Image (cartoon, rainbow, N blue to C red; front, side):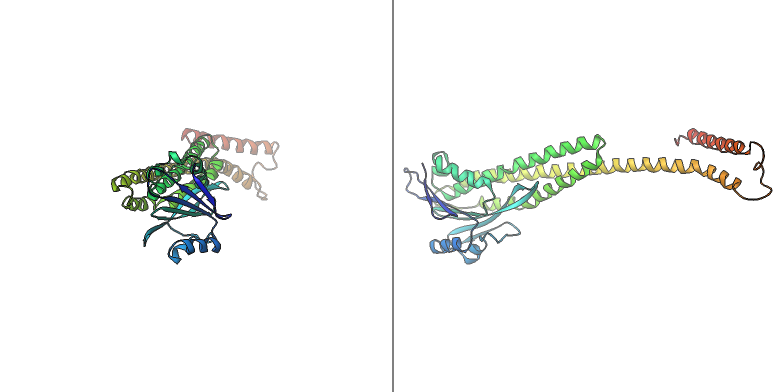
Length: 320
């Protein structure tokens, strides 16, 4: 069992203790850090004030970043979470040094809490337990965070399939609304994950006094592959949703053209009838037919013959 210490309401520390190694490793997990939590880190570690300020819960970085400071690595990463029917970024800060790893977040990334609780109960099964290395513990955390992106991508794929069915079942309006939501989520995912590959590549170059460099590179290369695979899937989804958007627009345009064609034909058919009624509606004394017995029916017959003749012309030219 792991040794767990609850320092305060927002700070927990987990000691990963392998009796077969001479090293010590602790994971400090901080949620919704305010000045009190920052002061705790100041007292215990020699961290840069700028890095500590970036960890306050009200501060949100617009981009991922990584800095190598004196004796430790500071990193800010964003990971997608699903909230209120949309994908939004959640930020997490990492402080990684010899014998310690610190995570600071706003308690909106369930994977961190799940893995922290898992470590409490099953530290013997951890990769980082065998060598008590913060580098390997960081890998295990990032591996789970990266894998959590796949369900969100799968969710987009399911929505895309539903949109395709809606498009070809002639419910284009509903499909257009769903499409906008999926496009927004794909854009959000791409924006959140676009710089991960570069940062993960930098992590493959990390050095450790405990773990061989080849082993570090081997594991972090897996994370780079995850990043590449996720980006490729997002590219495919982006192309697919754009193709569906074009298809939906084409079907909507075709439908609109059919409506306009019907209205145009109706207007043209009514044109000679309007002309005939306009001519015989003129109030002149020499107007033929008007005033004759059965004059009304003669005029109706002229209008009917004109309508049939025009419809014949349309039919012959395959306009109907």
